[in-house]
Image 1 (cartoon, one colour):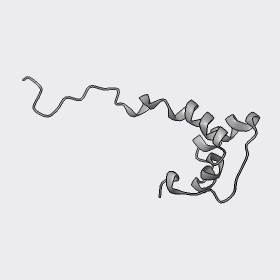
Image 2 (cartoon, one colour; image 1 turned 135 degrees about the vertical axis):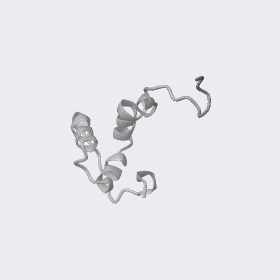
Image 3 (cartoon, helix red, strand yellow; image 1 turned 90 degrees about the horizontal axis):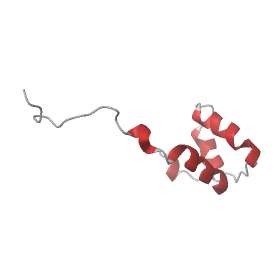
Image 4 (cartoon, one colour; image 1 turned 60 degrees about the horizontal axis):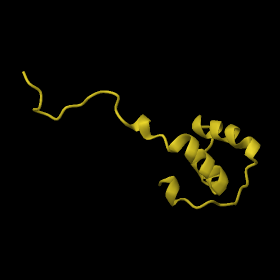
Length: 74
């Protein structure tokens, strides 16, 4: 089951001064998925988190050059 399909059980409002602390806990796997869904129920926190951590997709691109099979010259 993905986080996008989970519905928050309760509505949380995270204080802006705690955004970084909560994000650090999420990123270090200290928070179970069910609680992450609840945290992301706070739209302002989710917007902040997404901008800070999820908009940079460069981590998903390989840092090496892969050539299609059969394209290398011998």
